[in-house]
Image 1 (cartoon, helix red, strand yellow):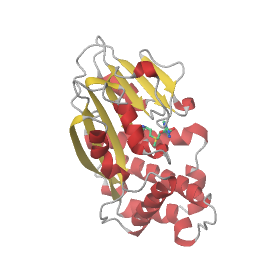
Image 2 (tube, helix red, strand yellow):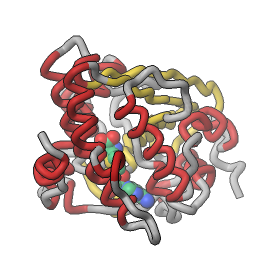
Image 3 (cartoon, helix red, strand yellow):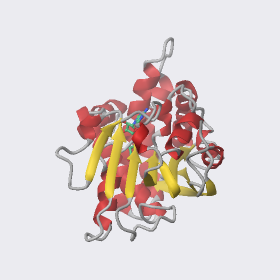
Length: 285
Ligand SMILES: C[S@@+](CC[C@H](N)C(=O)[O-])C[C@H]1O[C@@H](n2cnc3c(N)ncnc32)[C@H](O)[C@@H]1O
């Protein structure tokens, strides 16, 4: 496919294209991490309060709800700056609240959650320090409750082909330009520790896309996800003042498409989770 055809196919058509991109990635990530939850949260306990920050259409929450025993309902709350993605009316026990990770959370939410999950949302902090955003999330959990974060890491040495390497380089530039910084995912464990959490653990996952993925159907979803992301990234780069996006960069969707179909690519995700201290949530000013 030419870059123009790919752009036409993958340019975000209102919510539809973005939700398909997120659903593909959700399926891929869930496959590689082996489920939905990494923190040792005991979901068999009754009446947990579970928050998914940057929830988009709440797919992670909805799948978590489906995977938990029906006689043991929890309260599932999704937050995002964009409310148009979330299903309306929401399914039973699911709630949505407009909330930016950069803004103070409702006072009466502090210390009320058993589990706070946030995936691929920290870049939305923009110039606001991500340490502030993570501390604010940590305030939401009860003593003994967990915060879990997952983000994409573009800092490692890459054995990908030239197109995927260019994609990584542009992603790093994007993260630097928006203010989050391209090394941000590496800092997840220390962000949780500095937010006062304990028992912090982290794990890296190598996610295989396109021909690198042994599951052909999942590999194809990975191609779709990355092409859609690359089209969005080129649109962002074009919008930067004085930035000419031409030559090799403007052909990225086309070269990436070919490379993903022939050899695939691997990218790393880092997850980290930490637990609120038993004496926690009184120590923050
Ligand atoms: C890449 S999507 C990830 C969605 C979902 N967490 C997942 O993993 O599939 C990023 C989400 O973060 C939301 N977002 C961006 N900036 C945000 C902010 N400052 N506060 C809250 N949500 C934000 C976007 O609207 C979008 O739904």
